[in-house]
Image (cartoon, rainbow, N blue to C red):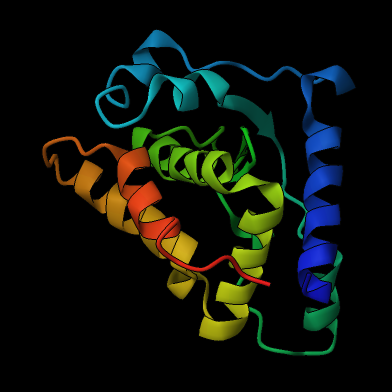
Amino acid sequence: MLPLAALGRRWLDAEIERLEPSSGRLADVLTPRERAPLEPWFEPATLERARLVAIHRLRGPRPLRWARALRLPVDLDFARASGVALDHLIALTDQGGGFACSPALIFHELVHVAQFRLLGRRDFVRRYVRGWLDSGAYARIPLEAQAFALEAAFRRGEPPQAVEARLRAELLAQPRTR
C-alpha cells in the first residue's frame, strides 16, 4: 500500500470511530423526504447503509496538514468542505449558516458511499490517494470525477441512472491499485 494511502486509511478509520453513533453522536438514516429523489438512482442497500452526521468542522489527514506547513501545493481543503463520505457515514458541516444538506450534496456523497461499498475501504483509499497524486487536483481524482459527473446528471434532472451499475462497470474494469 502506498505510504500515504496507509496514513489515509488510518485517518479514515479514526474519523469513523470518532463519528460513529457508538461514540455518543447521533447519526441519522436518510429521511423519507431526503430519500425520495435519490431512490430512482441508488440501490436500496446503499440508501439503507448511509448515515448522516452533523459536525462543526472536518479535520483533514495529518499528511495534508504537513504538506501545507511545508508550503506544498495541496488542493484538498477539508476545513472548507460542506460534507465528506467516510465509508457509510456522510459528515455534513456547519458552514456558518446551518448544516449543509442539499439533495445534490447528499447525492454526491452517496456516490462515494456506493464506491466504498463496491471497493471496500482499503481499495477506495488507495484509488483516492493514487488519483490525487496522479492528477494533482481534487476535481480530477477519478473517484471525484465519477461523483461530479453523476451529480451533474442529477442536478440537470436527467432520467435516473443505476449509479451502482455504472460504478461497477467503470470501477471494476480498472485494475486494482497497489
